[in-house]
Length: 271
Figure 1 (cartoon, rainbow, N blue to C red):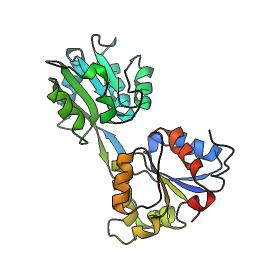
Figure 2: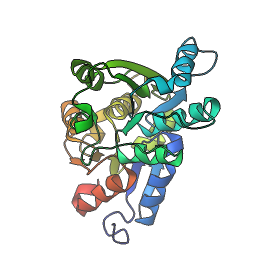
Figure 3: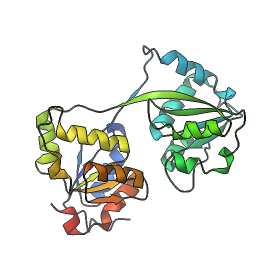
């Protein structure tokens, strides 16, 4: 736990979580003495009824009990899945092995009465693929609940293990757009002491936002800023982009990300 803002007192920390997921992280930062500034790097939009993809998702959700294994890859996917279940299932479908990537995702499913297995360590597809229940899947039907796009590692590996894998692409992740004045006042005037990035996609979007569509801002002034990321994979992407002051948190959850700032000394966090 953080010690009364010993490191974060007065630090301007940029929070990039989507709006509907930012409140807890902001509260933790304030409790630690920081001055959190919010600039979402991801926008989450559930697939709407008018969307051409909607009927297929509806069929998948109405036939949930036909799948042997259902894997939920994110808290957003879990939240939207529970909404679908509330609409079409008076009682939870039975006979499904539920899995969740990350404890936050499992916690969301638990609010709907779903007990999902979760890797003891790790927060990604690689950690999920180590679980013994997912080693032999001959002729098993697997549904992966996720946002549109993303990595194919999980589906490809499960298919190689004999599973019949489908995606239910429940939502879109897009890069928000901000006007130049908002970008300047939030990111550059003054520059933050630290930036919290919770995924590779959020990092990519943040770089786009920080440069602006017309590339009127230089990313160089941010590259030495203390950057907290949730995994070594995201850290490697950050290095490739030129960031030089990177810290890998114990995971993507809010407490882990905020706790990671405690390891910085004042010279690390102060521009």
